[in-house]
Length: 80
Image 1 (cartoon, rainbow, N blue to C red):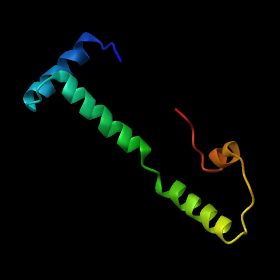
Image 2: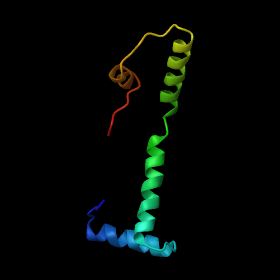
Image 3: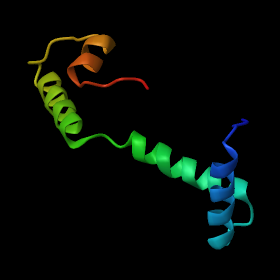
């Protein structure tokens, strides 16, 4: 994967990577991306609660079938 950054942003990233003793700027960027992806994968508490409720209803045979799209809308999830 290749990304393009403005020169000033590239210099800032290089400076931080050096100051924090990373072996390379790439190593710093990879770690930053891993952290961001992990953060984005964590469910918001209200979404987790809605999923728990849906699962309980399903397990108790009280829940109705909903499509992926309906569930996504209900949980207010977008796929950015």
